[in-house]
Image (cartoon, rainbow over all chains, first blue to last red; front, side, top):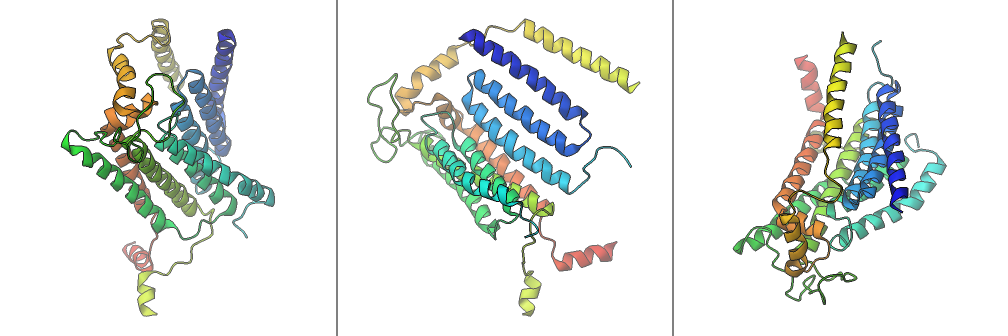
Length: 85
Length: 164
Length: 98
């Protein structure tokens, strides 16, 4: 049983690294915000596997829902593409 | 109409909003028995507000109500903490007295959990949940309003009101 | 130049984190557990509550929660101040000052 949990933890950590790299390398800022939300969701899953359900609920609600919404509102009122013109 | 999203999004929002709010209230009320508490439940309720704002692009004229709810939650939280000032601040003066939320656990150690226990901890969970849900809803609401994703509210500025 | 600085910073931080990961104690066994044992044994008897985390948040360390609530309140005040409705008179004044 614990081996399965260990394998899931490694998969979640690899996904975390991949989504964090995606946040950095996306040029479209809305895609980057959504990748940040996916990263928060994977981080909350990792918190849950490390037996901290309180932190997992807070991270899922704040990181995946509210922060993504606020970022998208901010991008809507500025520029969508990264870089200078 | 311009600020609403498509029919699919609105239907899914209609179905999902009430379960999300009920889950948030469950997290707040059972904060002293299960994982969760005031902050987590308030954040879940605020995420339902974000869903409503994105799908319908309008939230009515509830800015004053949300501000009042937030101030009320914080004030009651500080009052609850200050009442126990006879011994220390944040002293749990309700637990074990037998009143509302003042029940005693029948047996220490492993037990199924009883909702009528906790004293000030349960009440403070309620107050913090009120404050956090109102505060995060207000932040989401103001951000969406200023980003032009919501329909403009038809407000009359005080000077015009006087003229009329 | 900027790329080399970034690579050096990445390597230094990676070395620190890897060293911390190698020297980490096993999961669930803190070095000093006197306070944890006190909380775990004392909470149910004193506060009649099952959830130790909530008891620590709202009772033993209540002032921290008060600070967190105050931070949230000041954040909302800041957002409401920055994104407030700009009335007609203020707009005219801004145009006039420009």
